[in-house]
Amino acid sequence: MGSIDTPTITENGSTQSQAAAPSGGDHKPPASANGAQVEVSPEPEGTKKRRSSMLPLEVGTRVMCRWRDGKYHPVKVIERRKMPYAVPYDYEYYVHYTEFNRRLDEWVKLEQLDLDSVEAVVDEKVEDKVTSLKMTRHQKRKIDETHVEVGHEELDAASLREHEEFTKVKNIATIELGRYEIETWYFSPFPPEYNDSLKLYFCEFCLNFMKRKEQLQRHMRKCDLKHPPGDEIYRSGTLSMFEVDGKKNKVYGRNLCYLAKLFLDHKTLYYDVDLFLFYVLCECDDRGCHMVGYFSKEKHSEESYNLACILTLPPYQRKGYGKFLIAFSYELSKKEGKVGTPERPLSDLGLLSYRGYWTRVLLDILKKHKGNISIKELSDMTAIKAEDILTTLQSLELIQYRKGQHVICADPKVLDRHLKAAGRGGLEVDVSKLIWTPYKEQS
Image (cartoon, rainbow, N blue to C red; front, side, top):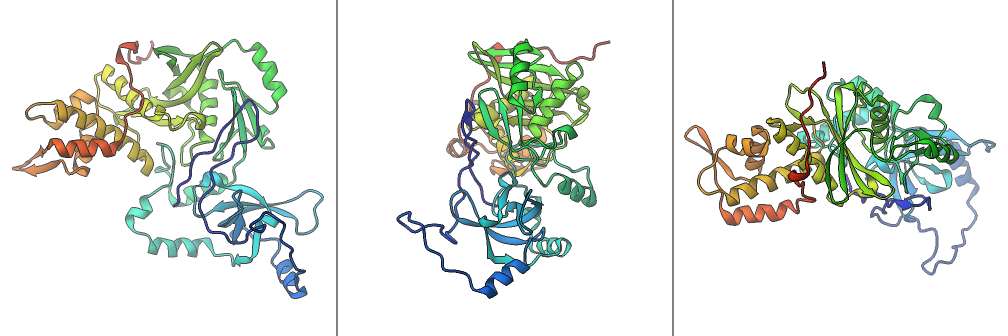
């Protein structure tokens, strides 16, 4: 899978955000080098007949498609729809760029497709079987996602295919949230009355959503919230964290899930938000507290999960907030006097984020600690589950099994090298600013 930068987000209702262009070779440049329009000679009659015979393109067709960068990339047709008042073959096609993440899937017009590159429709079951034979076990596990998120491990193959069929076409193209207009990435199961809406307008404080800008403006004149509807448990500078109880704030919890699903692919949407606490991180100014991201956790987890889902909104990504949220979840575990671990399974990039956090925390302790230290002691100090400590140190080749027990080998130069590779730790959580007591069910 190729990787691609996150979309640029526009402010104050300006033009829609654009994702960064993926690399790819020129297939059919639309214009000459000096920018002048290239003259195209008339097509032979035989070519016209052959092209018209293949239209409209079938779902499953593979073809080259001209993207926003003017270059052609391989795509697969996921869905098609007839244009209103159109000639017989005037369809729009919803395509998936096979080199890249599903967040770039979009509707395209026929003129963007190179019909000379059309490949026959491949039977999905045959294709899956052939692909499965070619893939290694590691590749089968690999999921190209951007966030730490809950997967569909509870679904069998048939149910998973049904889910993917239902969610294959992105239903909401953009949202307006506060001063940002954000291009969405994935399908989210909004109520049926929003099926015809390509853009939704969110109140950034209560997260109610509307179809029209005028509705949002009327709502904002009445909405008296200036922050998430919960208890402020942390404030440091302009950053605040609010704890929102899903049972006390059902509508907010559900709306937050709808919003998050627009940016998370393989995630189970929880309708029963009563069982969850939501920790919403905000940047605060004189206009109010503006949501940056959040993580959720179960009120009672038998598996010691301290995080169920985590998301940093696109306008705030790559600023260290994701690392801050992970660190914050462990600070709560320390206050509870428990060890914690994120809900499984993790995406590859989710595991990378956590492995980076675990590496920085553990190696920082090993550098400063004099003498021997056990994995249990490390777990007690950090609230990181012993299994996560063990796998992290094993991946760094810092642990050996001698005489029936694990021994940590901490050479200072090796530690420095691994710490450098792990990168910066992001924003620090100032524990002295955390005022919080663990959740207890009220009688």
